[in-house]
Image 1: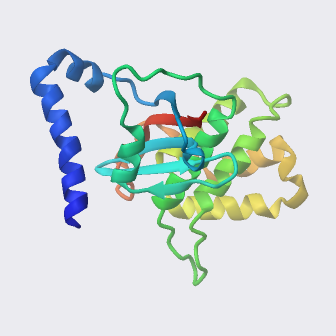
Image 2: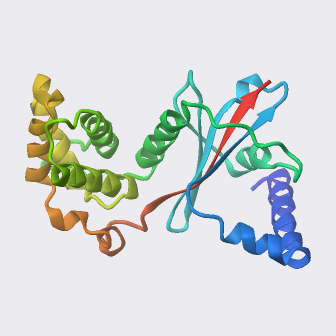
Length: 232
């Protein structure tokens, strides 16, 4: 690691230590912040930096991604992300934009791609983005649920959660995507898509504890916090 990077990381570690030692109440509040915390702030004169930064964790792995309205999500190194996340106590909290969840989805999909290792099957190269592609199809299906029962909707939401948390076995993801793609134009039919998912993803894979017990998965994927940067 370069000396400059070491010094920068030391700066933030020292800041954490000072808060812990001098402001234990604040340290406790920060420690108890709920997962998926989100906020927004203004950066003056940094138009190219506007967008959403999301901090993800999977076990001991930690990653930062940034998505904007015009660009796809890109991974950031710790120092670059920390400099943008850094805020003074008197910094004004801005209103989150309507596009917040669209940008968050971009970051989630990028994180899934970065933490999914597909295994080739029968000599075929496994698509590294199987889980992310199923996620896109699933979200489109959930926008058209008029013909689905409450139980069917619940099943789809459980599949979505399992995909986001990394609990779906890689071969299951590959075969499920293959079957979904075979629907071709009928993939827009929620009942057709549901039937494929139920055939390839048994209910036992959707139990809440599965991601933690699955030996292939090194912890579930978690959104820790998100910061939207706007330029004035």
